[in-house]
Image (tube, rainbow, N blue to C red; front, top):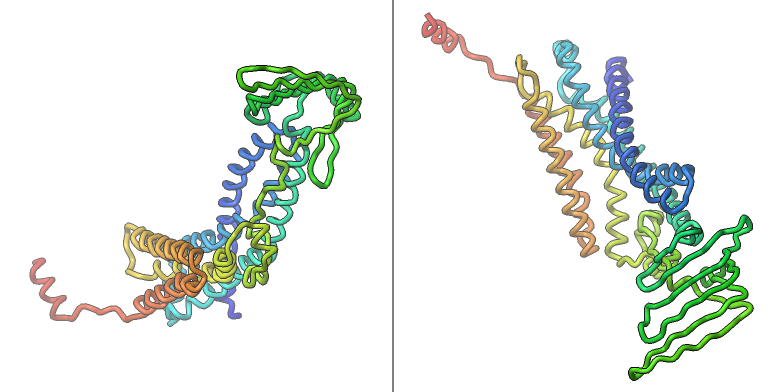
Length: 382
């Protein structure tokens, strides 16, 4: 690679790292705050919060990288122009097509990063995140079994525990189930243990009694049953993760291209949505070179102005928004009908076409005023 290409590429890569770090940091802070409030209130530690935020980062990084590439190319081109380096390059005979070569290399490098993320890192992270969410949902003690306070896991159910021993025993347990007004049950036990089974968590109460209040035809009857041990199914009180649907983003691209019944049952998605997700992944890496070339090519239009290149920057942003809007619209169309999957690739193709047209306009020789027009201007000024 020629030295001039390496110089432009190094400038853009440095700026790309800065913009990517800023954008990802903004997301990370916002996401970490919301997760911190949610998980800490459920009794989780700060390490769990850090793990969850780390597992959500690959997805947002894959979204942020094309935007960072656009910002880096636009800002880098503006700086090259303001420091007259771009003018010097063009004065040596380098056309806009020639100058766009290192920008294309820069966009391809970012596209490879996006491809690695969407096809490998993001599915792995989303799968791990789903497993950890299921594990935390199984941790009933951290979710709502708290000592010294009345808890209401669902409407009509009241729960109280005097204390939780170091070995996990629930001391002086009280549970009232009034979801059925005609059959209310009150459980009291000296001790209780939480047992995890394949069918979900079970609460084993020891040395207690059950009071059932039944109402029928205006009459009430109370029955009391004492027990030494009694098992209670907690699956009716909490969401243990068994009913959670897995995210399509937790599966590999190859499985999404040919979704099997097991995948569809686990995610609750249709084959059309699975195919839409797969083709969306395949098209995402192409957004990076398109965004980089848009930020570069638009700033080559127009000549020198004391007011800067803000007009070209605005047009570049509008073009990028249009391309992203078209991509979103195509994804929605394919999600409803998998036969329309070629629409997903229209957005990067349109973006590439815009880049070619803009570079062609920038490479056209500008018309110079004729001597007659210049003389007429001087005469009118005199």
